[in-house]
Image 1 (cartoon, rainbow, N blue to C red):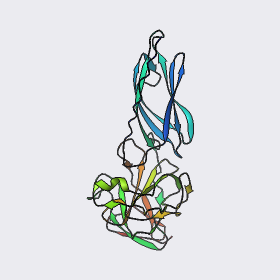
Image 2 (spheres, rainbow, N blue to C red; image 1 turned 135 degrees about the vertical axis):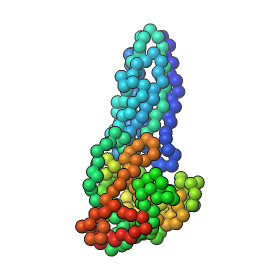
Image 3 (cartoon, rainbow, N blue to C red; image 1 turned 90 degrees about the vertical axis):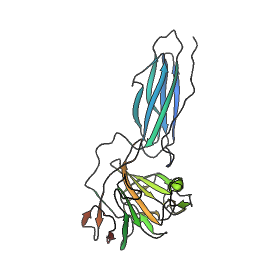
Image 4 (cartoon, rainbow, N blue to C red; image 1 turned 180 degrees about the horizontal axis):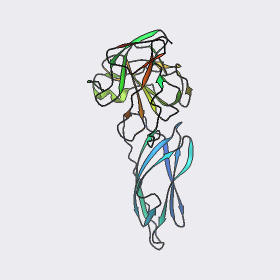
Length: 270
């Protein structure tokens, strides 16, 4: 009996951000093939797999999504059993992967975030949610602040991605790939993104747990930007465009909670 193995084609979406470190392997049995994944990241990684199989039957269908836990080796994905034991078989698959759990539907909508800078500082929201410049489709905030301003974590969580080697910037999309940023996974599965950070200014390393208020980096002017600022957003994991969500912030002495508005200044006195 001849068995034919097709080469594997992995299609990963989005080239603008770091991609999950996840590997796939297959184990052959008398009845067919079993596919596994190894996730090297400090967070769950969602995998969307599309199978192209011949004389094999999948126990999950030909298209499925599975969430691989953080720091997991040889995590079971799918069993492919021979349909006709006497004939050869072949298989191939396309894969998309992304940080976090794309099946997430429930998250904390009432939690109030810290302003992402230090006590006794006040900054202007240069561009707010669905802003007309670069936020047309996003609930994102741009805080106008000088290069070198200490950026603090707005909420506690684990650092899951961190880019700090870029120095280039310009005011058009050709510089999207030169952005320095940190992403933090929160306890409810949402992820915060802090962008345009200063070169080599990150204060923690991947996998570190940071508390709300900890200084995580310095603001800068890297990537697609027309001036120094901190770009901040919180999103639900997704294979496509980030599903950004609205977040309340503690303002003034920390006893007031508010959604932030464009062109307004906000004091952090807590």
